[in-house]
Image (tube, rainbow, N blue to C red; front, side):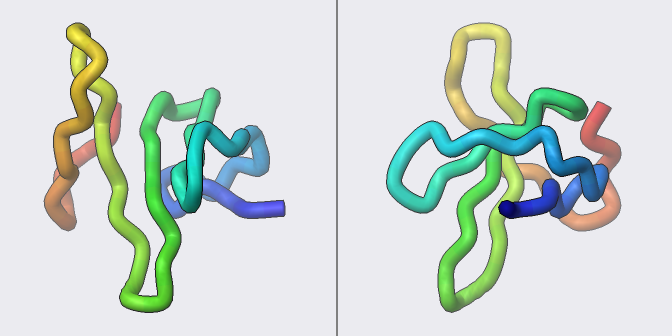
Length: 57
């Protein structure tokens, strides 16, 4: 089971191929060999990449 890279929660579900969603902090992330990318879900449903150091909530 994956842990959220943003809040370390186990409340993570799979939403697509290598795409996961954390229901605790409401971020989506991808895990690949090249690393993990974290995205915030905007009001219109689009994904906005979070930069390092930026708060997720």
